[in-house]
Image (cartoon, rainbow over all chains, first blue to last red; front, side, top):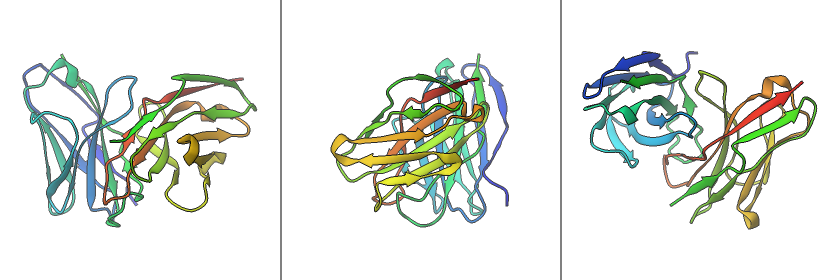
Length: 115
Length: 114
């Protein structure tokens, strides 16, 4: 049973460019959340998708957008990259229990470096 | 709004010694509390969680945590540290109204000395 898979594992982009990160949730999970983890910090919530819609959003600018597909996989897009966007981007999925105690399963992340 | 404070960004213990990682939370509603562990170049793995019921929660790898509402704490302990416990540990909180996002602390790096 595959867990949460993310691609690519590493990415180097130039300031001002756009990037797309991808995530496949754990089998049986329908909810996907994205987190940004800066070096030496805890993860920060970006947004959450289920039923192909953004349901919650953290304190991130509109440059960060996402999408969820009918097969529950998800993309995170970041436009007009800034140096400060360099971080580990984590995707997490959870089961359709609809309550806050449904534990998140995390992927290994995509390490984005903006130069 | 919810928040998590992890006291001590770095904790060093000897192999076989007690591990104590501190977590205090702030929440206006009854919280769900979690501890996650992160090994280098990996994602986060759930160690244990508190939702309702028994306040002493046992997790994987011999870890446990106790929810103390009066102290707004959820400290993580392990009686005897092992070299393989060296990692980054994160405490997190969510509320219980639907599929809520987690709010994480800034993490505690645990070093285990031989």
